[in-house]
Amino acid sequence: MATGTEPPPTHSGVHGATRATIGARHLRTDRWWLSPALTAGGLLAFVLYSTWRAFANADYYAAPYVSPFYSPCLSENCAPMRGGPNWEIIGGWWGLSPALLILIFPLGFRLTCYYYRKAYYRGFWASPPACAVAEPHKKYTGETRFPLILQNLHRYFFYAALLVAGILTYDTVLTFRDEQYAWGHMGLGTVVFLVNIVLIWAYTLSCHSCRHIVGGRLKHFSRHPVRYRLWGWVSKLNARHMQLAWASLISVGLADFYVYLVASGAFDDPRFF
Image 1 (cartoon, rainbow, N blue to C red):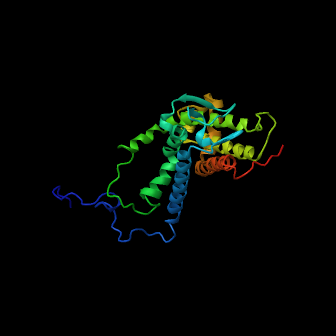
Image 2: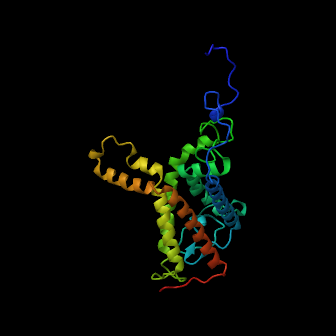
Image 3: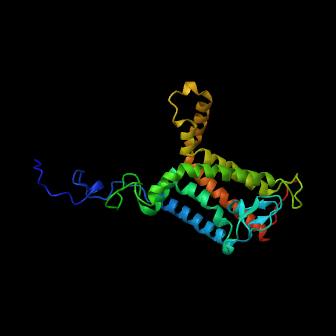
């Protein structure tokens, strides 16, 4: 019987004094570690690739294609992009790559995304490693302290992501031109950009914040039939949010890599007409 004079428990979380004592670290018999390991490997590969491309500051434009990592090109040291989003409204920034000014917004959107939080929390921090597997951390503070409290900026990054998706849509339209910027062109790069922008929009609109904005605060769906229909459509996309997150991550990397191959002269863009 508790007397109120017992010493405080020496453990917390799953090893707390009020939890059942289980000697084994977990009772799972499957390869539970495989999923977080593959997730960490995939994310690390993209981080390494995008970091290389962002600092390269070269081979990001081959008419009429511009890499999604460098669009819109805001710095004065951008390569000439006739007819494209080469706005040059920010100074040269000591010769830094224009991509470093652009990737802040899509990167912020993905870093604070609910799915990606789960993915890299498990993959890199083992918090938790997997379902029914105790995490090695002694305490859990959630996202209430710096820097994780910044995850609450996700809803604001969503608006920036809409703007980025709109600009990439404009870039995709421009891929229907040839090197002389005459309309009526279609190459393999056009297909690559079309697939990428569809996946980018699908991932962006499947966001939990988008679902909440569209209809999450409505009390009576019957009074808002249009918003209810939109909410239902976004909810269907939201059910595939994880798949769309990975598909769009791969597609944007492939789109950049395709531009790199064409711009560096390693590959000639095949023409359909």
